[in-house]
Length: 325
Image (cartoon, rainbow, N blue to C red):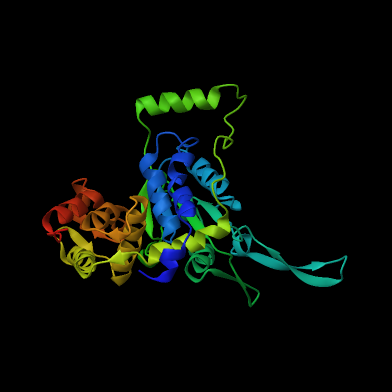
């Protein structure tokens, strides 16, 4: 392990591992979703969230922003939205008699891109450039985005009228695809009591979330995680899974090499959250579904029969032998 991993403050790592518990104080009943969003944050990746409205996506990002003391922005995507509504534009300032740049909402640490599939491809590409390049171009001028920069983009799986589905090449830019579902009955009762107690409206309350670290500390943790030990057999296992998904029965189109890279990145974050300094095959398995589900396309026959990508991926994980630990 390199010097960077040895020299990092253990107290900082402990605070980062406590983030999930802290966020769960505000976001009730979505433990798995919180965990997977943490994987993306620690891997310096982005998340595509699919779920019906009203399940706490905005509260999740606001709570995360409060816990890491990061700047939060939200963009509601609409069919008439322009790229400049995301990135910003140059305007003439009458007071100074000069042109100045007015930066858009993308200049933040945590960005909620709500219903990204409701805007046309040209507008989507403005956000995807920022995700991939960590920079924004405004009128030919390039502006870097300060790390950390996490995009949590949502899409509604039910209402498809008037939407512009993300092409496969753009879906591949997201490290993870997270499925958010209704909470359990006990969790929903707890959430309803928590929201309605002494509240006039259903305002998003993040006051229970304590700030555990500063946003500028996260890149240091990301660098530490990127240096976690990974055995050659574990790397080979991840590559074998991705390559098998390209030819697996019921999959018409499989993941490219970025799928293998993303799987290893997320597995390192999983190992870190499990308080280990090395990656195991179980970490690969734990990260496989959110990393690969949006990178495969099922055959028409399986879709007609009601199969989901997760069903096929679980079959693949059960049949591809993992190295012994």
